[in-house]
Image 1: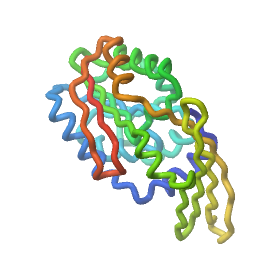
Image 2: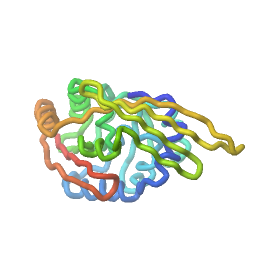
Image 3: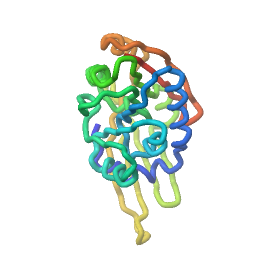
Length: 236
């Protein structure tokens, strides 16, 4: 789950992401849930872009496995009254409880086993206040197949070229990524990364949610913000 080079290119890679739309969707789902509290944890917060858009409406904190990602997030959120934690979503405990926890951008798909998913839901249950909610999105097999026609994703931009090669190994989707990034001197730096993802079926998620005494409130399909993905909302 830990990616050593991704933090160096993450914001550049995500430059076309409509974070405002993601934040609006989160707010809609929170309103839909009826949860009353405002204390929110962004689990897998990356470089903090979503927190920037939620901080004015909620008492926000963020947690990520990457210290490098958090260093970038800390610069963006300095003096913004947002707490940041270094930790693993499979075994996190910030010492606080939350009314709302979110994991966006298919963060949950970066877990590589049902045991990992179970560990996550245990932590969610322990970290939510009674009546609190957890919102997360996942992608499915169709998403992966559409993203990698012929097993390759290629994106040539003005200041970066991206080549992702995809293959399957047992139950995992493996992506070998190469980024050619133009630096300030006009030269290109080559960075490599290896991603592992797992597609979780709906019945698997349902079973583990129920096992951990959480209630599944809704599953919603969204194909407007970043390809077709499924948003789950569970409640303690």
